[in-house]
Amino acid sequence: MNLSGNIPSQLGNLSFLVSINLNSNYFHGSLPRELIQLRRLQIIDFSVNSFSGQIPSWFGFLPKLQVLYLRNNRFTGFIPPSLSNISRLQDLDLSFNPLQGKIPEEIGNLHSLKTLNLQYNRLTGLIPLTIFNISTLEILAFKENNLSGNLPVDICRGLPRIKGLRLSLNELDGEIPSNLSECSQLQILSLSHNKFRGSIPSEIGSIRTLQILYLGSNDLSGSIPPELGNLENLVWLAIGENFLTGSIPAILDNQLSGNLDQLVLGYELPNLEELYLNRNNFHGRLQNSIANSSKLTEIEMAYNNFISESPELSFITSLTSCRYLMKLAFDGNPLNGILPVSVGNLSTSLQYLYGYNCDLWGSIPKEIGNLSSLIVLSLYGNQLTGSIPTTVVDLQKLQGLALQNNKISGSIWGTLCELCNLNGLLLSQNLITGAIPDCIGNITTLRSLHIDAIRLTSSIPASLWLQNDFLELNLSSNFLSGSLPQEIGNLKVATFIDLSVNLFSGSIPSTIGDLQSLINLSLAHNTLQGSIPESMVNLVNLERLDLSYNNLSGNIPKSFEALRYLTYFDVSFNDLSGEVRTGDFQPEILSSSKIDLNISFRDMQGHKHEDHEFFLE
Image (cartoon, rainbow, N blue to C red; front, side, top):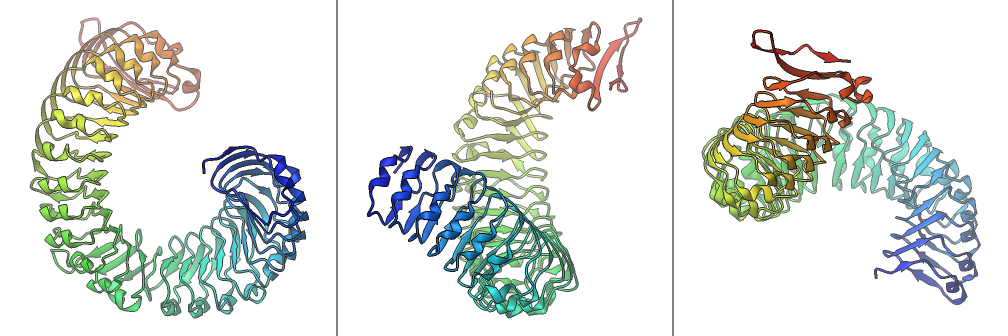
């Protein structure tokens, strides 16, 4: 209800109060001690607020409390051992607070506890063994802390009702207990991002209730147990970034090699919802049988050595039966084929399509416009030809279009200007021609524009300088001409501007000093004249500055000594004069990495030279 302020102490006068729920508001400060008077309280939900201070120890004096939710606050300090006095407590959620220290052993005395959620804190030390003996426990969630030690070898004996074991993102080590098969109700087993070693217990394949299995990013080795193929209710599976070897007995995601021809994907796991095979050494043909996993919402098979069964990428056609598909990534595979017309028949729920660096050729089918929910279309680094189909105008939810490093031609500007949600437009290194249209200013959501190394001509339209939310602007290596206007100072949040290798003339506008967020600025290889503006001293975050190959004159401003982060400075091949003093650069730079000062000079005969070996260390 958007309530704010502190909890009034008078709340403690409501002596018959049984339940209090103030979650998802803006309350702050500490909790008043007067709440200890509410002896009949059974439910407390103060989650998703901004309460601070230590968790009050007086919670332990509320004898009838069954539910205590304090997640998503700013409580600090330690977990009070006095919470163990609440003998009727069933649900304890202290997650998403910066709590520290060890988990009190006394928590193991809560013999009615069903849910214990301490995720996303800063807890350290061992998990008390007493917790593994709370026989009523159903959810044990300690994800993302700094807990260490081993899991008990008989973990299921003390937790017969456990359904969710969430221990990812800690420092746990040792072997994964083999008796996990005795956890007959286990649905979620999340042990990823720890230091577990040894093999994956084959007994896990006996947990028929298992729906989520995360074992990735550990030090596991050995082969993959074929018994994992028996997990017929499995929905999510990730065991990547280990040291597993051997062939592929089931749908897995590992740092291993194998031939996917050995696996009939859809027939073995028809209920699969997410499939992650990316960044491995898998090879073989992409099987059309994957379409039988019709509940799939995400498919990631990027950066392997898969090939397609046909040049038309028939596996894409087979995926048209996956009506819930939201993400499809097959980038980084040597597919050597064309995008089929059937790509337009993929699920209308598809939001992300990644097919870059795949050796794709041919043109982009006009049917791509049928994917009305598409947010990102990334097909860069291929051999695509033809023009961008005008049907992209139907992709009104599109935020990212990455087609750089292809052989796309034609002029497509009028169509792209109508994509009113476009955030990133990357068309670099293509064969596109024409001028930048005035309508570029209509895309008010644009943050990143890379249209370098194509064949743009004419001048930069005034509307582009009105895009005051630009973060990256790269127009380099074109045939753009004209002068740089004072309005360049409108790009106040830009961090990267590259206008090099064009035909720009005139002077550098003094308003360029207003771009205080700039990290990288290149105006090299133009015909700019005049002096370097003193206002550039205001570019306090600048790390790289390249003004080489122009007709600039005058001195290098002494005020550049204020540019403390500058590590690359190139003004070679200009008509600058004066001396360069080591005092012009901050000691912080001089004592760290070397600064490359590319500075041209004239000898006594007036001939121009450039010293590429001039370093200050």
